Image (cartoon, rainbow, N blue to C red):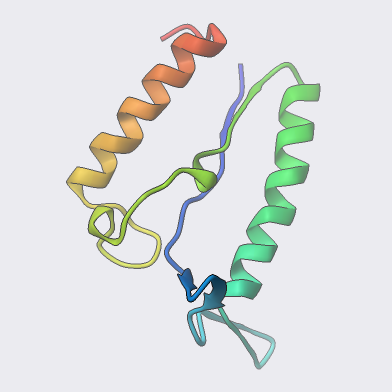
Amino acid sequence: TAICVSQPHLYVQERGGSKRGVARVFEHQGVSYNGLDYDASLRALDAVMAARCVQGGGHFLPVGTMPFSPADFYDGVHMNPAGARKLGRYLAEAFVRQGIPL
């Protein structure tokens, strides 16, 4: 059974009630993209992944929407041990909720 998990990141920050993207998160074909661009691309991938995973009899876990803090990460996308523990607990609880065999 496929288990598809979205990607959390720190490339979008909330400031003064609006979202701001971290500058120059990645470059593609000579064009630099910011955190809002990165987030939009992940959300588009997540939508397709969620639909295809469920259609194929799998499970989609929206980890990318979880409230992680900067203290949970080494950098913008890689979690440290504290973040990994938080993620592991969430995944285990989600498996139980959705009836996914552990």
